[in-house]
Length: 131
Image: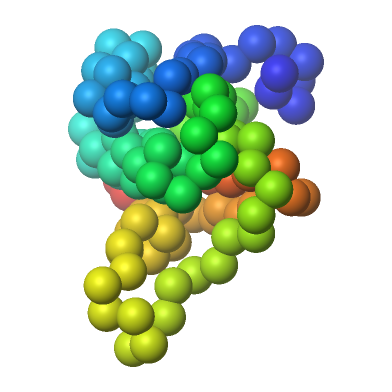
């Protein structure tokens, strides 16, 4: 549920046993294509893709949840929750050059994002389109 108490525009439970990125991207595009500027939609697609990829690659292998909505100000945001118990950390690419760039991409594109507790939930809010 969103802070307003209504259901998000898009909510999916996904099977971690196969790549879900394409499915999630198609769903996000379908729901938000007509309501978001192209640059905002592209950033949203990239953020969600990176978080879904992280849930699949580093989560506990359980079904995971993706929800996306647009707030009262027209900014998209959402959550990806893999129900894992591990903590997230920004990778140190100087120490591990083979590590992924997913969270760094999210950090660059999102207006804000964070980790909620220890239940594998990552939330984000995309940057608004510049006029």
